[in-house]
Every structure is written in structure tokens, then in C-alpha cells.
Length: 438
Image (tube, rainbow, N blue to C red; front, side):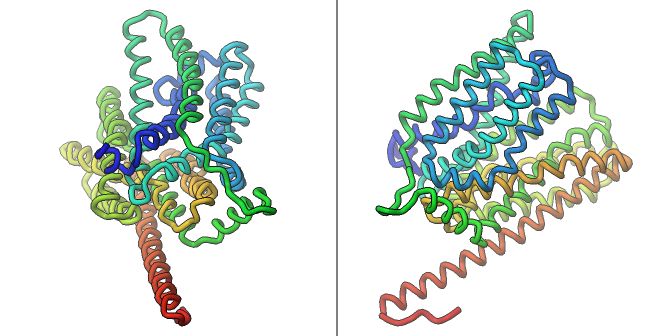
């Protein structure tokens, strides 16, 4: 029990509720999106579609970006529990339809569009649930656990499939069986959410409209500078995280790493590192810096340092190991920031009943870079020589991280200023006088 309290849980039921929220945010994606990296070609074969069509499906799923802001009203109006259960149920029904009827591309496109719409509401509910189910002083640990648990679950679930494929002939049948099994896991997940996640329904006074209060809450959040500073800081983290994906092709193109060597590096640098860094980020955030915003500033600063040295270093063969070490440090630093990517939103001073809208705004900003970062990096690689292209990509990552540090500093300054004004107002009220004008 002492360990639970240290993490921020006051009871076992709160702990169960927290991990029900976290795992619902992974299980819903386990039978489809989580396969795109490890089992991309098998997914094409099972769905009987080509690469272009797969790209369209993921674009439609990514359309969630356009609905995050209006989804803030939904997350204010309805409880985390009801949103999670509804989202899981919709995914279960639609996945079972795909499994049983094997529809063509046009039907798959409609389903992918539906998933995008649902995800715009569902994911902010997940991070809002993490916020609500964690201790007031343990936001870093809570969001670090979210990142580490989801990454560990995805890696282990995919590793199980790989292991079975290695032992049993007929990889396509094994993969199809995994899709069915992981889809069926949604049902016990719905039960866990129903059983352990409390109902945080919006409370209003008699005669007030929940719809109106939820909308007013969204407007209030949209007007908060602290929310936008936290959200933009999160955006810089995710944009730089996208840069991390290009470290493997960088080593292959510039230093001639073999496919096998690059695969090992990729597993460590973009997989295992995320599991470890999430927990470390949460611990440092809560018990050393006492602030996820300070942790974010530190992690982005380390990222700037690693990318800067990587850009400056010679690209000769004898510098390979030093470059690998630096890129692993870069990976660790950006995963420190990504592990708590939305934790600053939880520290932005948003009223608790409107935290759903804040997480929607944060999600909108944090993941917006997917609409331009991949395309920009792809254009750079196609337009320049290997060395110059990756120098530019890493340079952009460095500049974005530096801007994130500025946003984090501004957020710390604004929070300190607001805290100072609040203290003056409380003191003035206690003495029966007015606080000095700012």
C-alpha cells in the first residue's frame, strides 16, 4: 500500500481504475493501429488492400485531429467512464464486422472515418482519466506510467505474435487469430472500466443546463494562456519525437548500417527506450523537479544538446559509435519529454470539472505536427544529399526543441505570476483590503 501511495493512489480501487483507463487506451488500438509497424504487410494481406489504400485509411483515422476541439465539449459534458465504455464498444462492433464480413475498401474507409471521429473524443477521455485518477502531486508519474505501460503492452503483445509465428507454420492464420483475440479483449476491458472507474459526471446547480455549462467550460479553457503554452510545449515535443524516427535511416544512409544492425538499433532506440524513459520521467518530474513543466524544460534542453553535437560531429566511419551513443541519448531525452507530454496541461490551473476540455485542446496541439512533419522530412530527404538532408532534419528538431524550452519557461513564469497574485489576493481578503492592481 505504501508503494501505491508513493505513486499517488489512495486505495487499490483507485489503482485498478487508473490502469483500467490506461489499458483501455491501448487495447482499443491493439487489433489494428498497433500492427502498422511490425505487421504492416500482413495487415495489407488480411484486408486485401494496397499501400495507397492503407495510407488513406490511416489518414481517415488521423482525421481525429480536426475534431479534438469540439470533442472538448463532449469530454466536459459526459463522464470519462461513459466515453471510454462507448468508444470501446464501437470499436468492438466495428472490428467484429470487419472480421466476419471482410468488407471492401469503401466500407473500410467509412469505418476508419468513424474511428477517427470516436478517437477524437476517446483519447482525451483517456488522458483526462489519467489526470483525474492520479494524485494531485503525482501528475508526472501518472503520465509516465501511461506512456510506459502502453509501450510495454504493445511490444509484448506484438512479441507474442512473433513468437507464435516462429513456432507455428501459417503466419497469416496466426495473425488473423491475433486480430480476433485482441478484439475480444475489448469486452473484459469494458467490464474493468465499468467496475473500477468512478463516474465524474458534470455537476451543475438546479436549473442550469449541462450542455451550456460544458460549452462555457470549453470557451473558458480556450481563453487560458497557460493551457495554450502547455499545449504548444507538447507540440514541440511530439514534432521532435517524429525526428527520432529518422535516426535509423540516417545511420543506414550516412554510415552504411546493415538492415539487421539498423533493426536492433531501432528496437532499442524507438521501442525499449520509451518503456524505461516514461517511468524515469515521472519519477524525476514528481520527486526531483516537483513539476512536469520543469521536467519538460530539462528534457528539451538535453535534446537540443544531443542534436547539436550530432550535427557538428564529422560523418566519417570512425565516428559511428559516437553518433550511435548520441542518438541514443537523444532518444532517451525526447522520450523523457514524451512520457509526460500532456502532464503540463494538468498543471495549467484548469478547473477540475473542465479538465476534459483541456486535454482535448492539449491533444489537438500535441499531435498536430503529424500533418506536416512527415511530409516536410520526406521532401527534405528527396531534395538533398543524405548528409545534408539529415543535418536539416536534425536542425529543425533542434530549433523546435529550443522553442519548446522557451514556451516551458514562459509557462513557469506565468504560473509563478498567477500564484503570486493569488497569494496577494488571499492576503488582502484576510485583512479586509483590496489587492494591489497588477
